[in-house]
Length: 118
Image 1 (cartoon, rainbow, N blue to C red):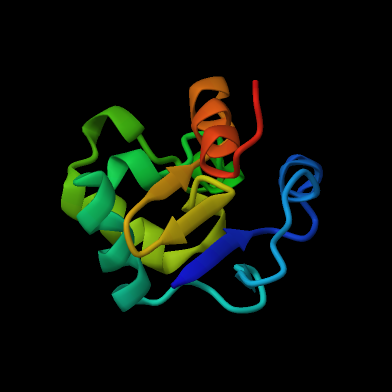
Image 2: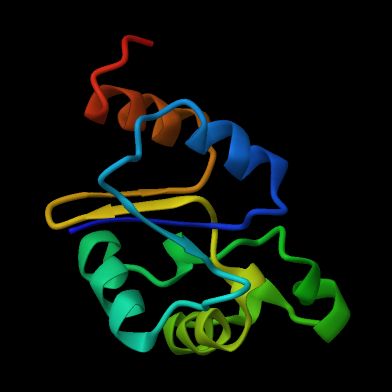
């Protein structure tokens, strides 16, 4: 399995995805086709944390008046399934590995995975 979850309207996602040959990857546009509970569980098995998958930059946080510091793992899971913008992106998911978000360390690991020298 090779899946990448992103938003087509996100310039950062487009930039990151454009760096790699994703010919044999399934691409999921999460606004049009939100993640399923099964897919979220696959991601959770690799990260051991719903919070690690949660975007604390989502515009929904302010709109809904969410206090992120008060959230527990069950809350993060519920929100991730509720609205696509809560998923930190992009997410690259394989049978063995997961790469979540656009932080520098994650992108360096992703480059290594794709055989690109940093």
